[in-house]
Image 1 (cartoon, rainbow over the protein chains, first blue to last red):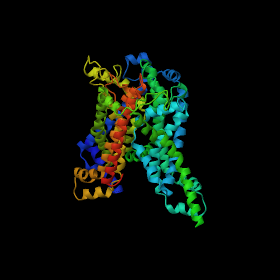
Image 2: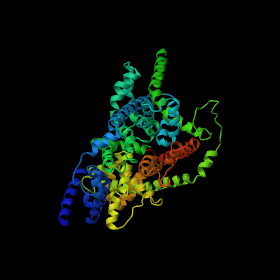
Image 3: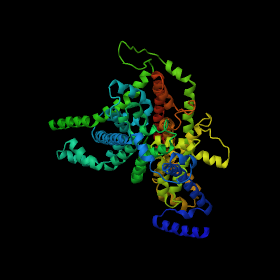
Image 4: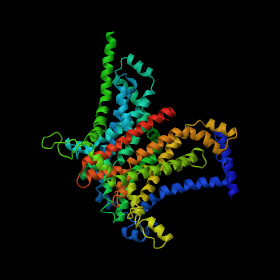
Length: 300
Length: 303
C-alpha cells in the first residue's frame, strides 16, 4: 500500500520537476512525508475543530447541549438564531458595522492615495517630516491613545456620535495606507505625469484620471486590509460609544459573554452570526487578504 | 520665467490640497493624542474641564510613574506581556516558519488548502474568538469532556486557578496568530530565486544544508522583523484577553493595555496612572521603531 502510494507520488514529483524546474516531493522519504502530512493535518484540525464544534452546538437547544456537548445535534433546531438576533439587536449592529466599515475604508483609501501622490511625485521640503510622521504611526499602539481620545471625544461632544467613531477609524488606518500607497505611487514613471502636465492637465486632474486607476492593485489591498480590521475593531468603539443604537457587531457580541453565557444555545448562535460575515469575506478574497497581510505586516 | 513660478505656486497649492486632509485627521487622532497623553502623565489631571480656573491642573513630575512601578499589578501585567512575547518568539514564529517551509518546498499536495485553513482563525473577530475559547475551556466545554474521559474525576479549574489561567490565553494566541507568520514567511520564501536552491542541490547540498546556507540567511531580516512584530503584537493583545478572561482571576491574566483600561475606565478613573502606563507603552514602541531602523540598515532594506 505504502509502496504504491510512494511510486505514485514519485511519478507526480518527477513531472513537476520537468515542468517547473523545482525540486518536488521525491526529495524526502516515507517517514518524513508522513510526518509532514501529520503536522499539517493536525494543524488544520486544530484550527477548524473549535469552529465546527461551535457551529454544531449552535443548532442544539440549551437542554440538549448540557447532556450532549461534543456530538452532532440529535434534534436540530434553528430557534437559537432568531432569539439571539433579537436579544442582541443584530439588525442595528449589522447596519452600524457596515456603515463604519464602508465609510472609514473609503476615507482611508482616498486620503492615503491623495497624500501619497503628493509625497511621491510633488517636490516639497515638508515631505520627509510629514511622511515620516505617518511611518512612525504604524508601530504606535492604539492602547496609548485610548484615554486621550476618550477625553477629546467628551470635550468636543463627539462622544456617542457616529462621526466620533468614523474620524478615529479613518485616522488609525492612515499610517499603513500612506506607507503602502507611497511605495506604490513611486513606481509610476515620472514621464507619465510630466507629459500630462505638458498637455495642460492640473495635478488634481492627473490624480483622478492617472494615479487613481493606476494604483488599483494597492488600493484594493488596502481596502481589504481595512475592511477586516475595522469590522473586527472593538477596543476604541467600546469606549467611544455607549448607546446601543450606535454600537458595532463586536461590541454587541460581547454582551453574550457575561450575563447570557449560561444560555449556551443563544450564545453559540450569536457567535456564529458574529463570525460568518468575515469568514465569507475571507473565503472570497483569501488571495488578496494573504497578499495584503504579507505586504502590510512586515512593513511594520 | 513667469510661467515657471506659476507652475511652482500651482504645485504648492496642489500639494497642500492633497496632503492636508490626511495629515489633519492623522495628527488629530494619533499624533496629538499620543503627545497629549505623555503630557497628562506628568500632571494630576483626572477629568473635568482643562484650562479652567475651577479645575486647576498641577505638575506632578514623575509621581505617577513611581506609583506605577510600585504597583504589583503593573508587574503582573508586564510579566504576562512577556509571556506573550515568548509564545510568539518560541511558538508562533518557529511553527509559522516550519509550516511555511513545508508549503514552500511543495512537500504536500494542496498547499493552498492548508494555507487557507491555518490562516482561518486570524480573520474571525477577536471578540468572537475570545468568547468561543472561553466556552471551549470552561467546565461545560469540550476540553473538560476530553479530560474527564482521559482521567475520570478531573476537575476543571483552568480559569479559577491563578497559576493556570494564563495557559489557555497563550494557547489561543498560538492558535490564532501562527497563520500570520506562516503567510509572512511564505511570501518571503517565494521571493528567493528558485534557481539558487536548484543550483545548490545540483552541487550536492542536502535539504538541511540548503535550509542552513541558502534559505535561513535570505530570511534573517524577516525573522528579526517578525520578532519585533511579536513584541508590538503583545501590546495589542487587549481584545482577546478582554473577551476571554477579562483579566481575571484576580487580574492575574491582565496585560499592560488591560491594566491601563482598568485604571481609566473601570471603577473610579485614575487618568494620571493610565496615562503613565500608556506613555510606558509608547516609549517601548519608539524603541521598537529605532530597532527596526537599525535592522533595516544592517540587512539592507525592508523585504
